[in-house]
Image (tube, rainbow, N blue to C red; front, side, top):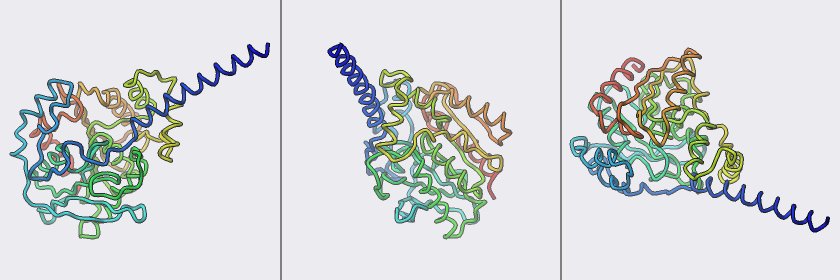
Amino acid sequence: MKKLLKYLISIFIIIIFIYYGAGFYVAYQILKIDFSCGMHEGSLPNTWSTSIDAHEYDDILQRKLRENFPYKNYHLDEWQDVYFLSREKDIKINGWLFNYFPNRPIIIVTHGINPNGKCKSESNLITSLLVSKNFNVLTIDLRNYGQSDRTSEYEDLGLKSYKDILGAFDFLKNIGFKSNQIGLHGISLGASTSIFAAYEEPEILAIWSDSPIAEFNMALTDEIARYGLSIEFGPAVSFAGKILTGIDPTLLSPAFKLTKTQSYFFTHGDNDTRVLTRHFEYYKNYTAKNRINAQYWLAKDSNHVDSMIKYPEEYADKMELFFNSNLK
């Protein structure tokens, strides 16, 4: 009997070890930060390229799209390198300021998850498209990215770094922009982070979200499936994430932070394999049910954040209409 009990206890310990070990492995892979901008490291507004890392895309259509894009047509030669404080004390944030048009709105552009930053092609392209429509732009590196301060080895999923966007908002007000002139544009995880920032700062009126996740359980299910695990491992991954980062990842549901006093635009690729389109549909249903002011564009034949590259002029026209309608 004692041997059987010891055997069962040993089996139980092994199972627990495997369960939480798998959780820590997945959480580590998702959250460990690469402080660099990957192959885009060192790229500037007048040197960036979509073709630098095109070969890394498994999807051949994404690869060809980036290889063939005329990125040089979208280079910008004038900008200011600026530093300002996050709303979280003593964290310094770096940005590129494109302040071209007096008395015109300005948009804060926020990048996605690592390796990433304002140096990457998506942020630079969005900047160029906005400038072409007479908007000023501030692109930023969130904490732990680019030239901004490093505070952790792990991604906080926007649950802390949204304060960096609010620091950018404060900086712009300090240099003369009014609250009703400042909008947000977020790319992928940067879109979620922008929604969190706007929730905390009701003076922000317009938020553009490109390919954001909507709700934690959906995002967790999608993410752990990439590692061949089922949702039963969700609690282990969540627990590990909390241990590594000091935040509660279950709070990562930006859809629940939408308000009735702000305006949103959601765009997504209909073939997105990184953030599945069910997140887009979730936002549509949630905003309709709660009477939240939101517009939508599901870009045809597009994978993750492809629409800006595949349909740059249409993308720019939609941004122009949205921000001009909601900012002064």
